[in-house]
Amino acid sequence: MFNLTTKRAINIQRNFRAVFAKRLLNLSLKRPMDPRRVAFSADAYLVGVSATSPRVFFYNYPSMVASSKGVDTIPTGTAQGVAVSPDGTLIAVAHNTTPFVSVYRTSGFSKLSNPVALPAGNANACAFSPDGRYLAIAHGTTPFLTIYQVSDWSKLADVGTPPAGTGNGVAWSPDGTKIAVAHTTTPFISAYNFPALSKIADPASLPASTGNACAFSPDGTILSVAHTTTPFITNYTVTATLTKIADPASLPANNGQGVAFSPNGRYLGVANGGSPSVTVYEVVGWVKLTAPTLVGSNGAAIAFSANGQFMVVAANSATTNYVYRTGDWSAVALASSVTFTGFAFTP
Image (cartoon, rainbow, N blue to C red; front, side, top):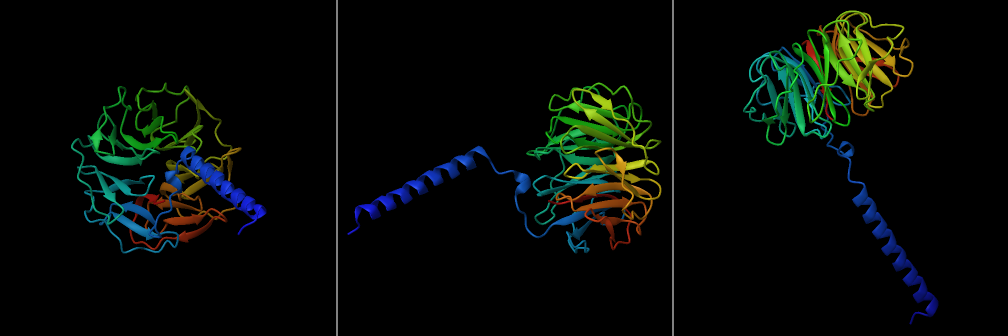
C-alpha cells in the first residue's frame, strides 16, 4: 500500500505530464510546420539545363557527381532556364520550342501534361512562387509574362500593363506579394503587385540597358537587376516603389547575365559575360570579394543551394562550369561536356 507521500508524488508527476502535453499541443497548433524545413530524401540534386540533348542533367548533391537520372520526356528545343518548387516535388524547364515549358515530378522525373494555354513564345526563365502555388514564365512575344496556378495548371489573367519587351528573367519577392520581370526595351525592369498584377511605377533611375535577370533579397528589401551595359548590376530598395541604390564602387567585369542572393542575404552573386565568370558582393556595403579565386569566363546564370553552402555558375563553355563552396570560395569543376544555360538546386 502506498503512503500519502508516495501518492502525492505520483499525482504531481501525472499533473506535470498533462500540463506539458497540453503546452506541446498548443505550440504545434500555433506554429505549423514550415515546408522549407521538411527533410527530403538523400536524393538531392543540382539540376542543369542545356541546348545539348537530353537538355536536363542531374548532379548528386552535395557530392556534385554526375547522376544517371534523367527526365522521361526531353524538352523541345534549347532549355533556357530551370526552377525547382519550394517543396522539391516539381522541376520546371523553360525552353525555346513549343510548349515552351515542361514540368516534371521529382519522384520518377515524369513529365506532367502541358497546360491548356501555353506561353505565347520562347520561354527564357521560370520561377515558382515562395508558397509553390504559382509558376511564372518570362518569354518572348507579348504579354512576355505568363503565370500558372500549379494546382490545375490554369493560366492566370495577363498583366494589364505587360513588360515592354521580351522577358529574360523573372523573380518573386519572398512573401509572394511582388513579381519582377527583367526584359528587353526600356524600362528594362517591370515589377507588379501580386495577386492584383497591378504595375508598380517604374523607378526614376532605370537599368542602363537590356535586363537579363533579376532577384529579390531574402528579406524582400532589395531587387537586383543584371543587365548588358555598365554598371552591369543595378540594385533597388523595395517599398511601395523602387528606389535605386548607389552603384558598388567596384563593378562586375562585364555584362550581367545572371544574379542571385545567398539564402542568408549576405552575398549577391552576378554571372558576368566576360572574365571572370562571376562577381560576388557582400551586400552590407556592397564590397566586392577579392579573396576567392573565381575562375572561368562568360558566366550565363547563377544559383545558390538552399542551405547557402554552395554557389554554382553556368558559363558559355563546357570547361568553365563551377560550383563554389561559400565557406572558403574554393571551386569544384563540374564534370561535363556540355554548355549549361541555367542551374537550380533541389531542397
